[in-house]
Image (cartoon, rainbow, N blue to C red):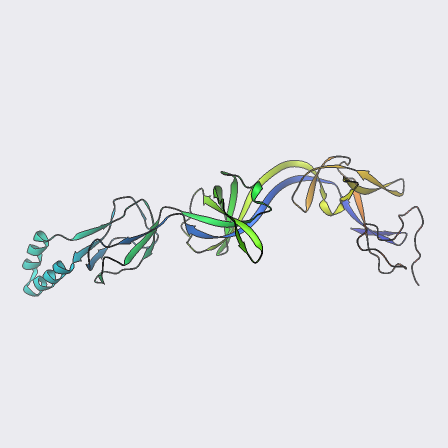
Length: 299
């Protein structure tokens, strides 16, 4: 709300009671924490694939069956001679299993039954868990702590907030276009099925929170001689009052002393209709405060 008095426009900022949540926002990308490529133990042909992308597997689980090049040729010959030959050679010449080397999630399936493969190409890729690698500005990195609570929001699913914890903070910075950031690994406490590697993510790091405290819009505050100060009306005259502030999220500040709920802080705004030039860097311009005279408006 804005009111005018003695040719000065005064923005009003009421002191209210509410909750304050201090956060840092960073962007990042969903990546496997540990990505492992799975290759065939021998060259040959894929007989059967038992999993698909997104399947959660355990260590030692069989994820596909294959035949060596020799077995594949023998089985093709047996099929031409009839079912009995197929059964005979299946018992004599067993298929080769492809086994998951660790517990995790299959994130890439690059093979189909009947496909000929070598033992040098990756046919599956898996990760033990998905994490978000967030880029945190160097000015904020000191506020990030291990096991700190955070929330992940994916651009593909903006309505869903995923609870998470800070898992790792990089020791080495990266500088791109003169902006220095640190990579912070943020691990979901429970990974949703729709989360995919490569997705763009936003991370809210929780720094502090307070419930039911006195709040004042931060733009109402001014720093005078190193002290937080607000302008208030006392008996029709605007006076400066020193206040003690606590936490701030940049938009709202916690008031610890100097104001009470319902008080209204003021801040002068530029009035283009008033005569004379004004200093835009001064909280009161060149206008005099109400009660002490003021410039006259042009008609």
